[in-house]
Amino acid sequence: MYEKNGSDSGGSPSGALTGRPEADAKEEPKKVPENFQEQLAFAWGYIGGVYGTILTILPVITYIVVNALAGMWPGIWASIGTAVLVGIFQLLRKEKPAAALLGLGTVLITSGVAAFVGEAKGYYLLGNWITVGIGSILLLSVLIRRPLIGQVWAAANLQGTFWRTDRKSLFYYDVATALWALLSFSRFAVERWLYDMDETTWLGIARLVMGWPLTFFAVMTSMWAVRKVDGRRKLHDPRYKRARQKADGGENGSVDFAAAKAAENGEARNGQRHG
Image (cartoon, rainbow, N blue to C red; front, side):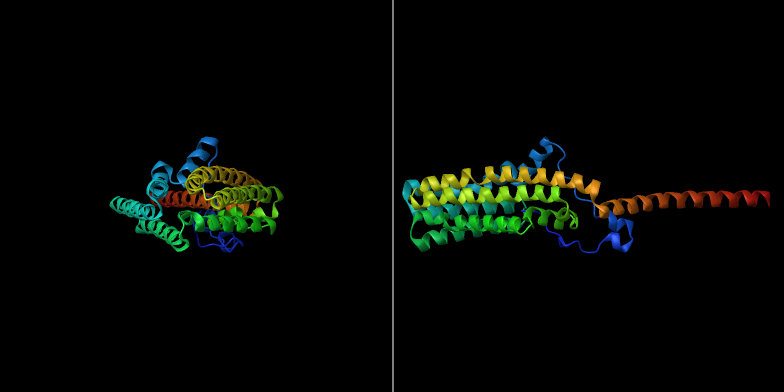
């Protein structure tokens, strides 16, 4: 869900240990949304905006409609065909091939599950179990005091382990991670109930309604937690303070050096005149 990076959440060595101001500056977290409007924009961008959302749900909408009108197999082929068209459209827009392949691959797998179980509702079976699996991992991370939202954000932004030792920061990440888990379990419960009731059409509608909207809400909550922890880190994290002091010291040092060099050159020129 978040950006990848080459640091672990265990606080691997960085500029604070190397003594290089430019390395220390890298410890600064990426700018997080500072107000509600920015938070909305970030969450909307995270789920792909209007364009990304439409492309993602088109194969599912196609399956829901065609399956309701003509049955499972026409629905499967229509869904695959839509995914192929979406992929071609993405490639024509010069988007990364991985995005097109991922979308098509997902539809092929879900269609394969439906064909294997021999029921139209099987199209949603794998996604349902993936949802409860994600929720379980998130809940477990909270129970062992390593909330996954904090782990991922800190690792991606080189923020070390301050948030683990600060009770309020840990609480904020607990709340955000627990909400993701709660929404996952809620989605699983609703979809599983509809699955057992053989309400295939409503199952597809629930997949859409409880998909992107709930994700949007969860991302908003995560950004709230990140913003809260970011503020506490700037005030209470010794590593952050040392990094900023070294970075500021490096900048001041370069200015002082330049001023001293200019003064030295000026004295040399004056000496030549007097000579």
